[in-house]
Image (cartoon, rainbow, N blue to C red; front, side, top):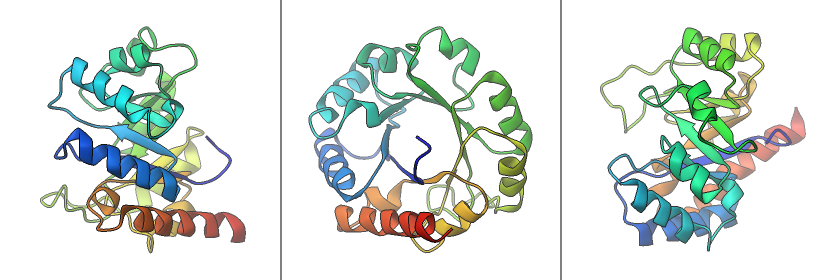
Length: 208
């Protein structure tokens, strides 16, 4: 997970499986590292079916399932991602397999420190910039993000309004990668847009 800046793509919860399969295949070809199934409205059975279908277009060890630790354990994917309403990391460890990752969404330094103390494998912090998915919430910016990455050892992924142009700013702030929703899932050319993010991240890796 730590060799190069990571590009995480998160499903929108608004697209059908056929469309997500198309996006996943193109995004993986374009340089996506991990896909998160974030489908709050879907049942465990549906999430399981999605994971199995996605395994036909990308490796299972590049797939994370949001909130559903039971499905992540059953399908044997890379792991599960936990939201504020999910199980704690310690509780989720009782469900997933030993080799699987558990990530946690955090929105403050205190939340990040608590998640690290619980043993999270990575954190997703945001939203950093203005985001279409959270139009009524003020973006958090990068100052607290810098404090988090400077003080904690757990890898941090930045999310919220991330573009190929500002992705490097997050890496400069100490992030190990970025997470993108509509910037890729709603793109006219998914592969090309994913490649633009990948190029920005890889360029930073080459020059730093």
